[in-house]
Length: 123
Image (cartoon, rainbow, N blue to C red; front, side, top):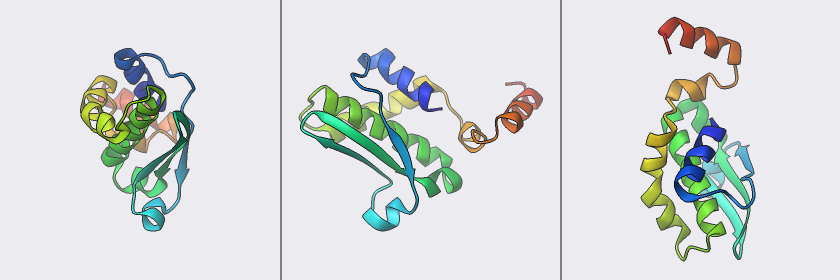
């Protein structure tokens, strides 16, 4: 799933200078009030954290948050003045380009089950 998002971003906005480092953080929202956080210094992005519970309870929002944070990483690399605004303006386009469904997110941890489901559904 992450590779599909990265490919869609690179297709539209050019390659990343450094590959984004994403970690799932338990209870990130409870600790910080944010579903996702991109940490950077100057024009060097360091890491991305996304709330782990989001992937369990709201996979559609998890996709959106992940793409948003990946775009912020890209904006920081490009030295955009407002990385959050840059991310907000491009998130919907990238989600459409990547064509990932919530089922993809839920079944990512179980590849055999995912393949069986997609074979049975004709995908």
